[in-house]
Amino acid sequence: MASSIPVIAIDGPTASGKGTVSQRVAQHLGFHYLDSGALYRLAALCALRAGTDLADEASVAALASGMKIRFVDGQVLLGSEDVSTAIRAEEVGNSASRIAAHPAVRTALVALQLGFRCAPGLVADGRDMGTVIFPDAGLKVFLTASAQARAQRRYKQLIDKGFPANMLDLLKDLNERDARDSNRAASPLRPAEGAHLLDTSDMTAEQAVAQVLAWHAASRSL
View (cartoon, rainbow, N blue to C red):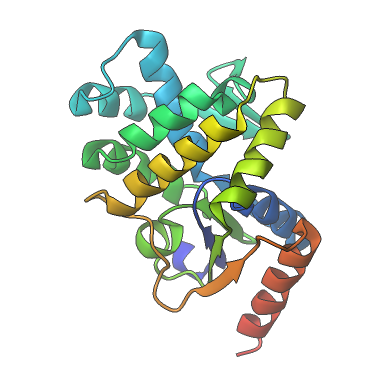
């Protein structure tokens, strides 16, 4: 039964470090990894490429439900195309936040996300993994960090990937995205009941991973 397969749900706002932490935790445990944010970025990329109005909920949901997605060796494949870099552009990220507010889009992606729950276990990162998608997760973590720390991380990520970036613009975009994600009617960003809160503002990725693994070990011993 899928419900018997362990899940670690790691939620948090943009650039809180949840992607890096989740991937490393999954690698350490030999678990599968779900980057749920990538699914919304993929849907946004499809909508942008198709010239679809992001406010057109039904059309965006139809695009989302028809996506052929695979995660292979760190690559994100849309059909046969590697879009790992394309989905990390700021325009795509901001568009993903906008379409994620559409209930129909979220519904279209639920089944896809649930399908990642496979033995021996799953580490799922996103914004509603512990509240909506995997409410029975054995471990729920909510990562956060100050807006300044997250903007600095996002700036470094973009520069390292060869994208142009402006610190003030990034800080403004992060604050706007936080407001959208926290105030949307469908699955607003918030800690799941019983989630461990982890502020990574002054932590290294290694320290955050160690803390999540310690919580996981403790949860398995209960």
